[in-house]
Length: 116
Image (cartoon, rainbow, N blue to C red; front, side, top):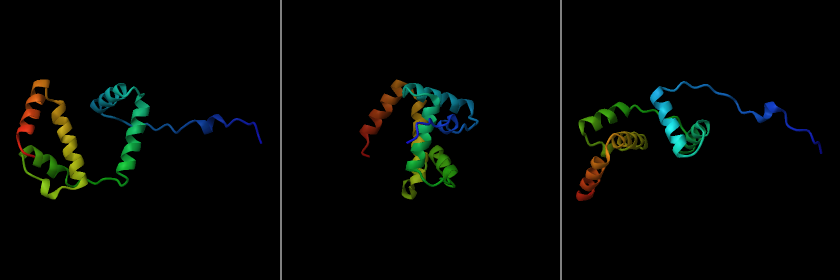
């Protein structure tokens, strides 16, 4: 059995340069800090998660329909697909992130008052 150490090249992972819009870069930094991970580890974790749960490359021809539908208040639940649900969840997270505490509390009270 050989006592040779693996070469440094084998220990390194491939460097991959990606350009991020400034707002996405900021969000990644914020999430990484909350999760107590480096930005690199956060990006790796997110990519691995998306590959596991969304193994095929999603094509969102419905994306514009969903966004315009949400903005116009249209009910798209009858034609729900996994892609539409992901987009709807993303849009809801964006809207919720922009609400202050009182607005969120009011929305929660409203949602609890209606029969879902």
